[in-house]
Length: 318
Image (cartoon, rainbow, N blue to C red; front, side):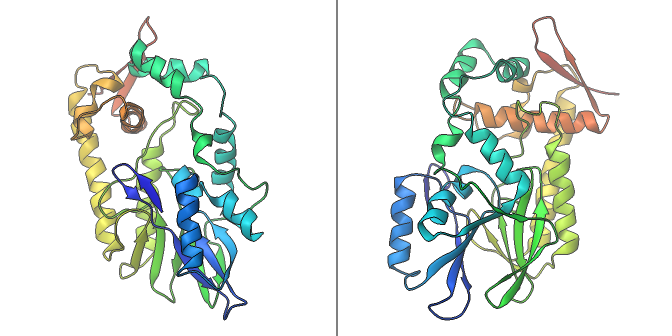
């Protein structure tokens, strides 16, 4: 499904959910809300997916490129959304901000990270955009929980939950078919964004993400075919997990060296990112930098102090 931008598209999946024409398609992830994705779905249903209805819609997590068309699909085919509880509720919460003014908590959060007045004004102007990338969500759902076993067609699928990139990200693993749909939890070429947001300023999502990656490695065999949300399917799950964990540990080590002298969150981008951070990337870069800084604090390797202007400074411990 089309995304535009650097990623260009998102992979979505259709699984036979019952034999013959009376069976349907179980759709996994849906693409970004909007007319371009809606047209792409219409082409799919007139082409390779023709002859079957949609029986249910699975969503790995609540980001708009994954859940954006879930409401459209479930209403069009009168079927149920399957998603973890935290992802559904968080999505509803963020969608409720559409049209609302940026709250003081959020402005204070980014001021503390070191944003200047121009960046804060841009944030005010853009606030509430999450819901604009969603077709109206369904009002009910079927809950997915870690360890659940779900029959899709003739095969048993196991739910493997990760966290950090999002609160309760559901991967779907089918031992019979020897494959796993990983959404954004494990990607072949890029590392999932792991960020701290104004709603939980002292959160430690990076520890959650690293821990859940290590747990997935112990539960899912290495020989599976990995079907990610972005880029191509691949083999080598365990090596990719090791690479992702090691990359973030190296970033944490560089960050700790950089904050030997006190730094703000906006001062540490060079320890974590190779590209120049412009206004369009500032929010993501700030959130990810704060995730790494909060991880160091949780490990006892850094401390945070707030100055008289409401700006936070981070320093490595001895």
